[in-house]
Length: 202
Image (cartoon, rainbow, N blue to C red; front, side):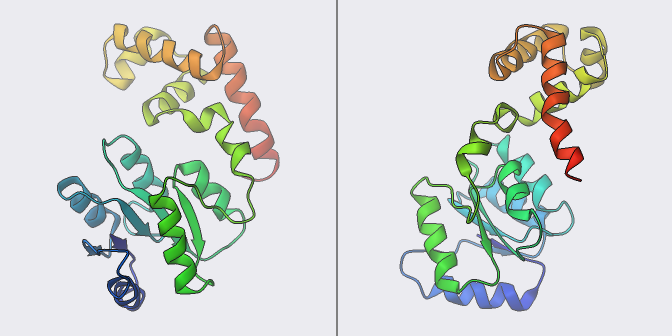
């Protein structure tokens, strides 16, 4: 499935994919909401999206999809600016394909993604895959950020609208993924993982 706010890009890419016997184009959309609505109803293996997709945006769309069973693997097709490929990978996409590349390169990227690979030019994929925070679910990330503000289990339960037992369950999983033993270590991990990025202006 394709999602791009530019109708010319959407039309051109649709034509290219339709002509390739390796793919079957399920649907197209000009918005993130349209893309999400379709993949909730129809099985889609791969989604090609623009990073600046209205209204949600690519990052938020990928975040929502990560919580869904059988969600499509996402290829972000966008202008290669600054650290965008790294941001795309951190968000949880399967691949980044610059708009400056040939259409055939995008199709080959989709083939590799369908085979279970991650495709990010010029990036060390292993570095980010080994980052425990990259492995957290959306709810676990929210909980870690809330922990960093010093919230108690009861306050977490209230703010996240879940039971205190569910809070404890998520915290246990969170500690396991981060390789820490308690709340204080988790908070320390959170701040140590963020500091370098903030110094770099990210």
